[in-house]
Image (cartoon, rainbow over all chains, first blue to last red; front, top):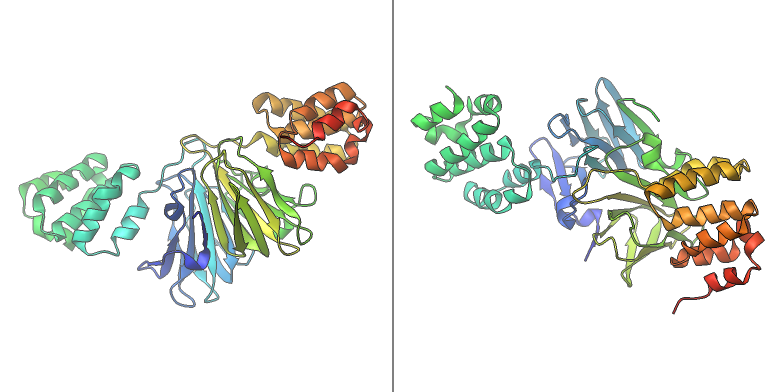
Length: 209
Length: 212
């Protein structure tokens, strides 16, 4: 059935303190990005601090209930139920902290002038909740539904390295490095997830060390 | 219109167009997706008129306050505040009726696989101030321009009203005939005083008769 209530949405608790309540993937929406966020503790993060530089999305946030303290660029302000903030500029850093424990925020996003594609971070967020083997199986099954990204292949490399598949990990790492060598070099530098493949010659070649 | 990097608004303070339409996308000039809200004045009012998505949009509705009953593809859906209702198929008929005065529903929409373009029917927002100022020629011009992009029934309905007010009966009847396949426009037309100048025309009576 294509109806649900915000309180019935799945809860995916993220390390920053916010809880991702997936809406787009719940319904299988393919035309725009949409999610709900709630706090894990009364005054925790509710909207992750981030920019939209990679995706180029315009974002609209609506406080569904409660109150949240937003920071957008250099500005800070509190918004209550029924208040909207539209962030046109993808490069502006934005985030929010819950003021009330039952606060819920809806976010809608897409890039002007381009057909929408689901954001690959959805894969990473979900996989981060799973054991390595499960995460690898999950990402392998669903990655074709998302645009290819260096981050997805990099996370796959980490998962495979942890799950005891060094050859698969190196394949994924090489693929990630082909897509964004600079980012992969930075990510891989001190990432213990990759320790089991760090001494392989293919590793040094992939990360340009 | 603005190019500000960010801005805020309260849903209930965004200037309405007509009594019920809260044009969120236009207010912020959002270029990436469609988003609007509608609010009901009374219990039992139709908030979302029955329609299919001629634009081909996927639509997500969110009941931000009050309580509504949706009818989607013939199925009734009870939707208290906080409910999300997704309609994937643009061809599926959908509508929503308020169960409480002041019920507000937001709708987000865009087309799968295509860059977003603002829907032609949104120009009725530009038409409204002209209509209220009695500039029916100006209103009709905006609607005709939009109809060149998109043959939307709401645009045809409003154009028929402008033409009826201008005494252009033939055009008004012709354009009304392109709107009334949608039941909501037959219903609205039955009491809309804008159309009084053509109400006694036998063709008008025929246009409003129930479809078999």
